[in-house]
Image 1 (spheres, one colour):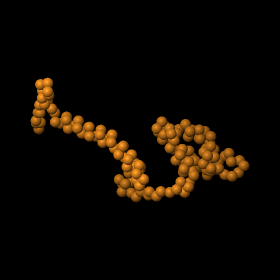
Image 2 (tube, rainbow, N blue to C red):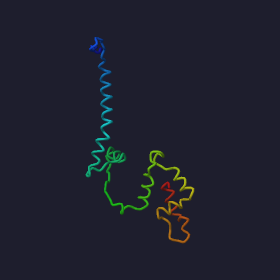
Image 3 (cartoon, rainbow, N blue to C red):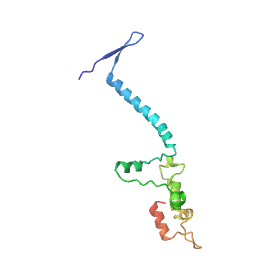
Image 4 (cartoon, rainbow, N blue to C red):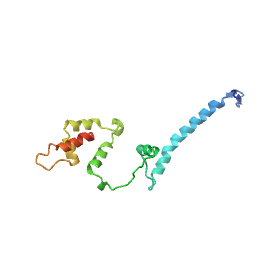
Length: 146
C-alpha cells in the first residue's frame, strides 16, 4: 500500500518530507510518556482521599481471577504481635537495597539460633532458662523463614 508523501515547507524555503507513519509513532510515544508522568500524581491525589482504600498487586490478581478479596480494617491491637513485628521487620528502610528480605539480619538471627527473634517477638516460655526456644517455637520460626 502506498503512503501519500507530504512535503512541508519551512520559512527559510527548505522542503521537508513528512512521514505520517513515523509521526503517528512519535505522537503515540509522547502520549505514553505524558500518561506515565501524570499517572503517579493522579494516583497520589486519589489515594490521599480519606475514603479511598488502595489495593495491592495481589488484590489486583485476585480481582482479575474473579476471586473474593476480604478487606476488613482491624485495629492494630486486634492483630497478633508476631504478625505486627514480622511486617515491621519486612518493611524496613532498606527495602530497595535488599530486595524485600534483609539477608544480613536474617543471617544474624539464624546464627543466633533464633533466640533473638524469639525474645523480640515475645514467644519464649516463662522458665528461668528462656535462652533456648521451645521446639514448637523453633519450628514456627523455621517455618516463617526467620
